[in-house]
Amino acid sequence: MGKFGVLLLAVVMGAGVHAGESDERIERSRELSQQLQQQLGAKLMAAMKAEGPVHAIDVCHLEAPLIGEQVSTAGEVEVRRTAVRYRNPANAPTQQQVAVMEQFAEQLKQDPSQVPETLVTLDNGEQHYMRAIVMQPQCAACHGHSVKEPVLQAIAEKYPNDQATGFKVGDLRGAFLVKWMSEE
Ligand code: HEC
Image 1: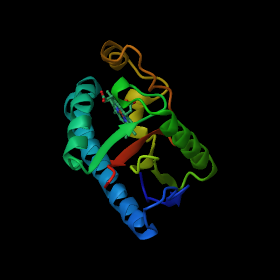
Image 2 (image 1 turned 180 degrees about the vertical axis):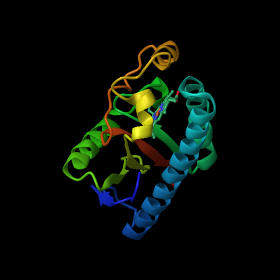
Image 3 (image 1 turned 90 degrees about the vertical axis):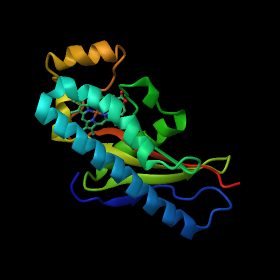
């Protein structure tokens, strides 16, 4: 993804959280999402090289939640991915997450050099960090405009309601989601 520019939208909106703590959370959340990105990316690209994209679909399906769990800390923080147009229904976003991603897409259009991120405080005291996932050339085999057979077929079998094709490089593909549990 090249250099990571930083762009903060609405930062702290809730009460009871000091700005310094939020800065720390943003920093930590960024690290966690980058860990998921790097580890999953490495697994995916190794699988693509060794056995091709059809096999790599299974690797993505199995490894994404596993690596997410590994970088999460039980009871404290949960790290995963979501998207407006998702492939796996388990990754479906909430209305609020959709709104954040729509904002991210807009920001990316205006300044493609910055990867949008934000930290939102919910009414229940939980804080959710989100960071844009930008479509790269190496994603096209499975998320691009002309996904080829037999990849298309393999995706259709596993994900009959897939919405995650038709993206072009630089588009917002989705977002990392880092959920911090409430401390109370
Ligand atoms: C080999 C095919 C393949 C490649 C290459 C691939 N993906 Fe995926 N992607 C998948 C599959 C399969 C899923 C669904 C995983 C699951 O079952 O949780 C997925 C899910 C996702 C999700 C989670 C939201 C959703 O739609 O369910 C995001 C975000 C995502 N991919 C982004 C990317 C990005 C960015 C790249 C390139 C760096 C990429 N993918 C490369 C196959 C691929």
